[in-house]
Length: 227
Image (cartoon, rainbow, N blue to C red; front, top):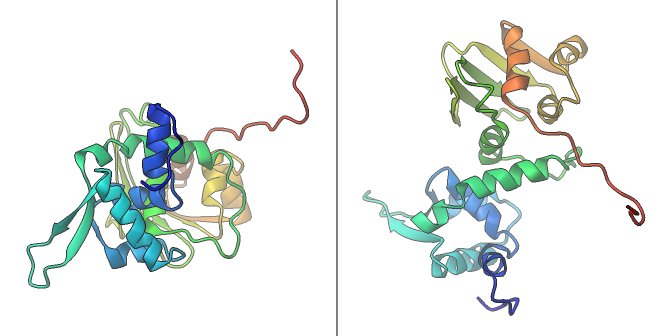
């Protein structure tokens, strides 16, 4: 690494490895599986190719990811997390949930990718509440992105695409999925105002807001706190 904090500290070293701009988002996109360079570019459309190459090289040198040659005719190279890099899985989810509590409205320039949508469900999943629950959801996001989530007795599986026979199809008509997850928008209000469409039993929408949840946003403090 070209820059260090000059601190003999595990946290400082972690930031030296994954604290550079874009590095942790690259890890985020590899949490779900190996990707080619072009696939990483597609998921991070605002990163310059030279910067992506530099970050991939740095993460490889630090043992976070590796390159692997696919056994196919085109002999494509993919990037994947190593065992060491894979230990960041839960850290990425926890950090994502921490940041989600401070999310406001998306700006017109903000990108919401398929990987981000999938990971947002893993991030907000309430496994304890899901004990004994079996439900399948299909989610349609603005822009045509579709994914499905299978909840089975406390476990969750999320993947790209539709799911035949889903218990409910949920379609937020705008950036309202975050409002549902945070509780700012109740299931009843979402249906009443038309901000969310549901195909199937509407009770599954209420259940969805219980299975996937973002804790309340922190209260900002102003001035000096006196105790």
